[in-house]
Length: 235
Image (cartoon, rainbow, N blue to C red):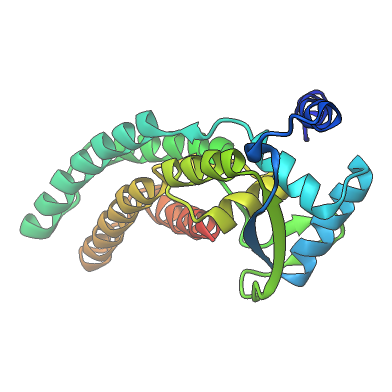
């Protein structure tokens, strides 16, 4: 939700300057930024703006300026790298000797615990539920919404979006829809993809020797599902 106190403070400062005849150049919202939406995303943002008693552009601007800090998942990436290294060693041994080494159950338990942490922090379902409406991932974002910013606001939002490795349009859209920015998501996806590939190789070895360790196929499916959710989060 947009912090109304911050909204009022910003607007009051600008109004006071205008009344005193001391409007700063930076107070003029003469910089235009564009946000791309699907039809249904735009309808949802309009609903939120109406509920807040704001125009669409005002709501998007203030939602972006008041967006919570990005979620830093560096520690999860580091944890994933450790699991991935252990799993990679096991996979090399399995491929070379055509058997499943001991200790796999412990690694699978670590994978399951990691997926639980990811689910809490970064999961986006393949379909974004917005009230009673569902937006499918394939829907085109061809609705252009323009918002007006001051030079200082544009600079601040450019910096935040760059820090998050996002386009400004995507940053504004996520803010307007109440989504959180997740840092290092590309690194996370790369590490999880490597884990998924190693699990797939272990499944092939297990099939060849006609022995499938308990939980192997389930964790491989869970990793694949998580990757789909993470890919949706990047959109």
